[in-house]
Structures are given as structure tokens and as C-alpha cells.
Image (tube, rainbow, N blue to C red):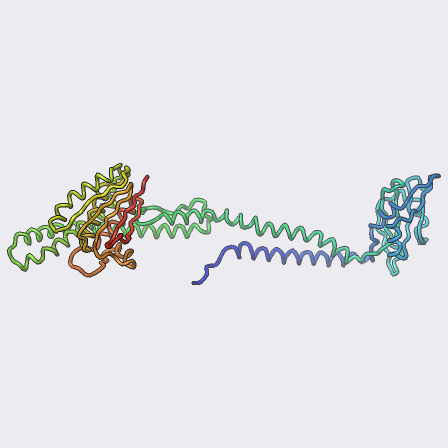
Amino acid sequence: MKKTPSLKRPLIVYPLIFHLITLMISFAILIAVAIRIDSGGPYVDEQITSIIARAIVRQDDGQLAVNMTQELVELRDTTKDLWFVSSDDTGQYVTFGEVPPHYSSLITRLGDLSYAQLRAREAPYNVAAVIRRESGPAGTLTILGHGKLNDLKFIVFTASNLVILPIFILLAITSCVVTPWIVRRSLAGVSRIAVEAEQIDTIRRGRRLSEEHVPSEIVPLVGAVNNALRRLDEGYERQRQFIASAAHELRTPITILSIKVDKTVNKDMLKLRADVHRLATLAEQLLDLQRLDINMIEEELDLVELIRRVVGDLAPLLIASNRTIEVQTDRRLPCRGDAPALERVLTNLVQNAVEHGGRHIIVRVNGATFEVEDDGPGIPAEERERVFEPFHRLRPRSTGSGLGLNLVRQVVERHGGRVSIIDAVCRGTIVRVELDKS
């Protein structure tokens, strides 16, 4: 079976891939442009100023001095051309290393500056420097220093990673969490009409799918389905009316034929009595199917009394054919339903039990459930669903209309119940009807 395509890929996966590719290309272009525009040489690592500030102390006479801290020793060992000038706001300063003469006039005015990046134009870039205001043991100082050099490409690459990574994470969360939520919310109307469509069957006809809260792109589909449902309802109604009319028209000639057969003394004509009775039963059951659609009236009823009344009416006919029937009551509960329809259900089940060879029939009542058990040959497991199909017969025979069990199922389903067939304890068949208890 071919797997149906999902909306997740076009609505979530593809946009996510497109966003990531677009973002990577955009940042690549941004980095390339930044590197292209800025070609002023390498930068001095700004972290050296905080190390230098922690190494500057003030002596007893108030002069600044350099204290070779462990950090400063490590910095000096890793940067052979390290130099710096540290000045306070009063103009006092201290130097370390070989300060280029380019900054001689600037040393006494460092207190006027707070931030700068000075880059050399040519190698070895020993005049490149950084200016920062830092706080340390000697107070607030302005530091001009030269140390480890960083290439612009490395700085841009590091900065871009710090920016791109959070954006990538945010985009992934948005696409993987927010986008599915948006999609589900947008398609909630589709899920709603799917539930509505599940509730449409031959019992609940006339319903239409709601176009409210459905995306505008789905509205034409919903409209087409509603039109199809309307045409199906119209076709079903025409078929129902035809069957009802045909059944009504058949009753009169069947009744006349039955009377003539009963009054005749011709033995050949008397052989037609079973066939005429079969035609009469078929016509009545067709009318029963029609009445299900228009005459279902629910009322509170006593299921035990209803069953006893039906069994009492059928008992003389069964006794005359050398059969017996009894009613067993396990539990008595009131229930709701259409009494005439349920009477037809029980009548059909008893007649079906007799037709399948049952000599002793037991009708058992337990609350809102009743069973009809016979001692006949039984129904094979593979046939227990098919016997409810219209005109299906378990074996060829001259009696029966083939609609009895189908009528039973339709009546029971209209009562919100279910009918099933199981094996009897010894032999035979049990047909169980479970009605809705509410």
C-alpha cells in the first residue's frame, strides 16, 4: 500500500532547511564583506589589559609599580614583544618593555582616553596597541599595551559563531516546536470535519460537514463532499421510496394469492402455500425496513414483559410444529427503545432459530441484554457476519426471505446496541442482542 504524503515535510522540514541555508549564506556574505572592508591588520588581544591592571600596584610613596604576578609572567613568556604603559588620572604612569617612540607624546595624556584599537600597517606589527580603562589594586587606570595579536578573520569567525549558534538554536526550536503547533492549529478545522464525517452513516443521514474554521483552501473540498452527501441522500431516499412502494403494491396481490391457495383443493396449488407465505414475509420485512426510518419512537419499556408477550404469541405456532420455547430471566432492568421494532427483532430471531433446525428455543433476559438460543446444528464461525447481509442464506432452502437477520441488525444498531452470534454450550447457536442501557 502506497504511503500517503504528510504535510510535515512541505510545511516544516523544507522551510527549516531553506531557513538554515539562507542564514548560512547570509552570514557567509556578511563575514566576507566584513573581512573585505576591514584590511587594517591584526588586532591586539584586549584581554591583556585586565591582566596588566591586576599587576599594577601603588607603592608607599604613591608611585605606580609593576608587580610580576603569575598571570603577567605567563603573558610575558607567551608574548616576547610585550610592552605597556599604565597611567592613573593624575598623570602618574609606569611602563613595561620597549614602548615604541610613536607613543611618547601620548603617555602623559592617557588619562584623557578610554577606548581604542591601534593597528600597525606593516609587519612585524609591534606598534599595534590597545587602550582600555581598567580597575585594579592601584585604582582605575588607563592602559596602553601591546601583546598577543589576533587576525581579523579569527575574530570575525568567533563573533559570527557566537551570533549564529543562538540563532540556529532559536530557528530549530521555532521550526520543530512552534511550526507544528501552528500547523495543527491551522488544520484543526480539518480534524473537526473528519470527526463529523465519521458520524455520518445510513442511520444519521442528512448531516453535512461544517465549513466553519476550515482553511479557505479546504472549503472547496468540503463543499464537494457535502454535495456528494446530498446526492447520496437523495438517491437513498428514492431507493427507499421505491422499495416501500413496491412492498405496498405487492401486499394486495400476495394476499389475494394466499386466500386462493388456502381455499383450493388442488394439491399442486397447495404446494405453493410455502412460497406464498415466503413472499408475504418478504413484503412485510421490506415494509419493516421502511418503518425503521420514519416510525422509530423511543420510550421506557419493560424488556422482560415485552419478551414474554412475544413468546406467548409465538408459543402456539411452535407447539403446533412440535417445538418448545421458554423464557429465563436473570436480571430485570428498565430500558428505552421502540417496542414494536424490538418485538420484530425477537420474532425474527425465534423464526430464524426454528428455520435452522432448533427444536427447543430458550429466550434469556439479563438486564438490557437478551439471547435466543437453539439446539440446531449451529452456524460456522466464518458465516456469522455474512448471515446479517441482505438475502444471504447459510444453505439453500425454500423457506425464509433472507432479510430477517439484516432487519435485526438494523433495528439493534438504531437502538445504539450490537448483535452477535456465539456457540451454545452444548450445540446450537446463541444470538445475543445488547441494547444501550441509557
